[in-house]
Length: 198
Image 1 (cartoon, rainbow, N blue to C red):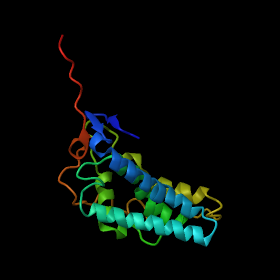
Image 2: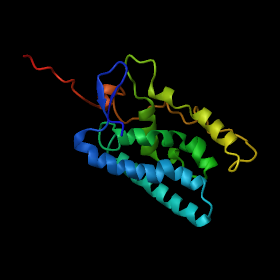
Image 3: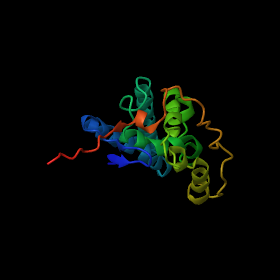
Image 4: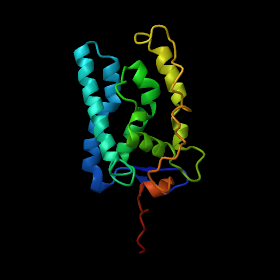
């Protein structure tokens, strides 16, 4: 659980607000099992039957997330939560890494209009007063190179696919999911405790 965080240049961000905790926990479990760990379960499957089962579960979950994101800007409404943070690393690397190395290629994230717009939205979140932005924490090209060159059992030649590159994913393209990408406009914010006077 990430919970409340201090972000440079911001007041406290609450990614795990009390009124959504049950929904966040439920969604986090599904995202971890089906998507975050699903890509690895696919890539390291040792039978066609196991691989097919994981792929059905993963793409069923991605279809559910696509439908959910057709109704709201983020996974649980108009503010991002821990569930969005949990999904981001896997979705950001999906087309460039997991589709090829782990054979998760029934559909690309680019084929999901809402999920791909959500990815661009998350990528473009702005943290005022900080030199470190969300986009700076994810290096898709480095991940593509690392996965393909170091997972010898899955890619004995070590050949790194030509793409898609981070630039090919066009993550700076307008997302059309909201008017502001400022952290304080897209997150729940905690109010600092006020000290009672004696």
